[in-house]
Length: 229
Image (cartoon, rainbow, N blue to C red):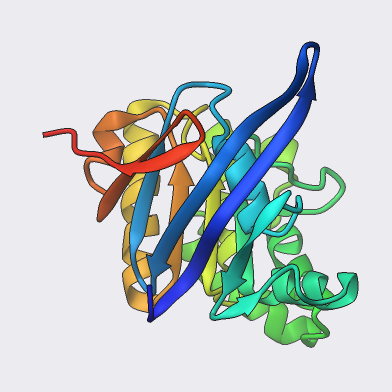
């Protein structure tokens, strides 16, 4: 898996169920290359979100390691892990999780401001991405003044600002109508190519999954290459 931006090596993760431990991930191996878009398919509850949380260092594996550009996310202390996550990983979830008291551009710029980027530079980078996602007229609107599709596009812009090496997306189009979902995916794919961002996204949308570079299916705790042809 040399040359991969994001890697998983023998990831195991279990949770305590009513009858004892349940293995959700059972020796997962994975690699996503620079500029590659990989779809992650699987039934609800199979562990897709768990895998994304481990790869994003939000949850530690029971065994195995997750690596960002060759550095293990769990071999550093909590502060180092938070720094790697903030600078190298973008997250998009099914629900936008925007801060309601801030405008669209303020929500996006917040990520850069937390890194110490000057306000003017953070605002300019945020403006450019929001305009790219068709939100030039909505920069100064609060989240509750935006449609669901607009809110999700703001969330995607927030994840991409600052050019993370990896974008992890958990059902990012799940609450969108087919046309909006297709347009958002297409723009994500274009940005990944242009900026060299590795994208791993969990989805139930097999039509969109076909437009990814690769499709992986999570079943019985393991990843297998899948084809929808």
